[in-house]
Length: 132
Image 1: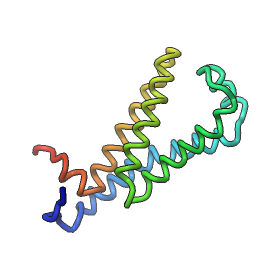
Image 2: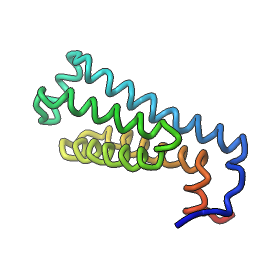
Image 3: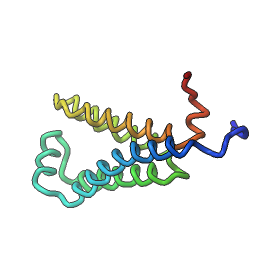
Image 4: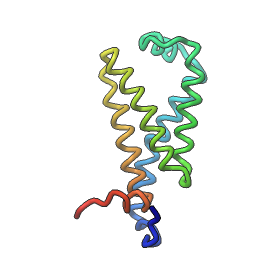
């Protein structure tokens, strides 16, 4: 479905609001991914707490970083948002499974990723228009 009747893009205010909101999940996910690669004691303890093998730390970190980078690139941001949502869905399920209340943070990051994208990408706001 082609959207040929697009304007020149979102307003400057909407674009910058979207960029700022999108920056929070990007920065937190990149930080989390790189911390996993460094394997400090809290990360190792966290993986043990969640029941994951230490051998999964690097693949999960690379997956987290890759999904985040795909989200951060404007041309691939919609695919990235889908991938980040899937990654965070797995993190949410893991937190819920062990009874960790931090699942709220993973849900919030996913919501912020989509709100930020909605504000900065006219294709998404044209696809899902909000009523005023």
